[in-house]
Image (cartoon, rainbow, N blue to C red; front, top):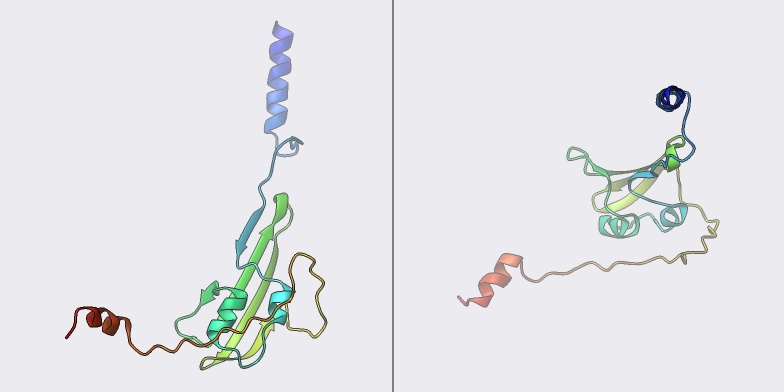
Length: 143
């Protein structure tokens, strides 16, 4: 009986050691930020509106209130406890129009072979509103 207790104590001590990692421990994949790819960046064209860029790339992770002409996209992945990989992308605007991009990915003319998605450029039309929301609500009740 005493041999069994010594064996159990040694195994417990060994499993708590930092040098020994149990092979059956599952490590969770960690993904943070905006997921973006080269095919998404390739769809960006100078002169696109902020709304069109947001439709293509998603809403930016960082939008500085003091610099409304800059949108920052950051994507970080750490699959299965491996080293963290981070990608950055910045879209710059003048007014409501896209004037330039910078970061790890840049638009290219070379098509990207992504079998899961077709590379399609979507043009989002501007919304012309005749009335504000308040005018529409008060219009329901008459003058």
